[in-house]
Image 1 (cartoon, rainbow, N blue to C red):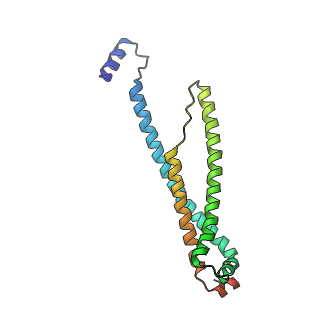
Image 2 (image 1 turned 90 degrees about the vertical axis):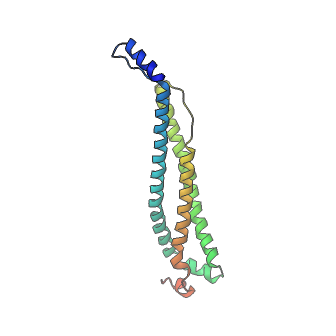
Image 3 (image 1 turned 45 degrees about the vertical axis):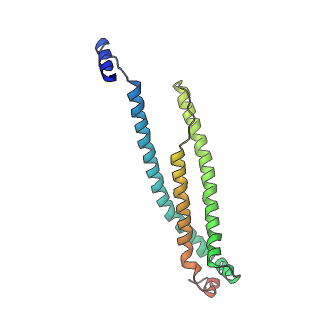
Length: 169
């Protein structure tokens, strides 16, 4: 029914004028935004895979530099689970603080840029937050951090205390 009305209006006006259907334009925009959200989630997942390897290398280097500390913790009677908990908490705290700071800076910059864009075109400024992308990224980051802590400590935690205190592997 809308298409017939749209075609009828096109017949009445000149060929240089454009007739837009706001309902179909809105549907097209919503579909495009859905695909853009899916693309953002895929990019976030790939970023988390890359950050997994970067964090793993960084944590293993840090543990290698402080292998003596792991030996002291083991000699004090800490269990393997407690050592995993210590290094896991350290990694989680680093990721959570980076997430909070990155979210605050990113939201502030994007809202300021969007505000100026909408002000320039004199459009109402919609204040929205990408919840699906944010929580999917949060989930990926927490899984990545857990796996990094698990795999990073695995090769060092089961070594004998004497080798850990000497700094040998």
